[in-house]
Length: 211
Image (cartoon, rainbow, N blue to C red):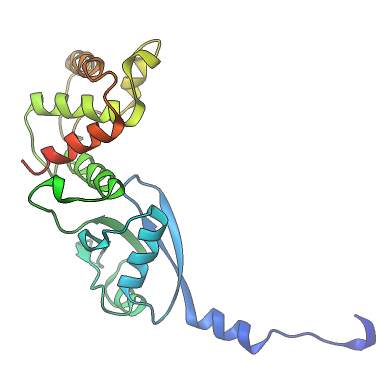
């Protein structure tokens, strides 16, 4: 280095490294994003950062939760500093974004982005067995979900792709022959929804969660 000068890390760099932290947030579509926050940032500030990325304005319906050290789901207390809260109670600094408050009717939701997140939450709850439904309801909902996620039936040469798509609750033990039969019924439901817009399907699916 010319003239024997020695550079060292600045005080500003050290302050930033001490006063910031990165947390990961798993979204309802299973993607994981990262947020860099101040150690004094509240859970609400983190939630607003997530909402900004999702283009959500109706943030009051949503929250963040984590797994506690005893592996129990626990909602973040949004008014408290997030890092201290996680250090004290969380098993790891991984947050989950989700619907915290449900409205009596999905028509109360003003924003399309809000309704889409409700759709993802209801679909997740059905597939993971938290929202119980009959086999007929499962087939109906699966048909709506396929239309919402993939579009019209006639875009595909065959419906073989459905075999790779999670259609039914994970705790539903089905024999191979029964699974194939139900998958064909979902394909017929999908066909019946041809030309129905994605937004209508997500609305219908979300509305079912309130019935």
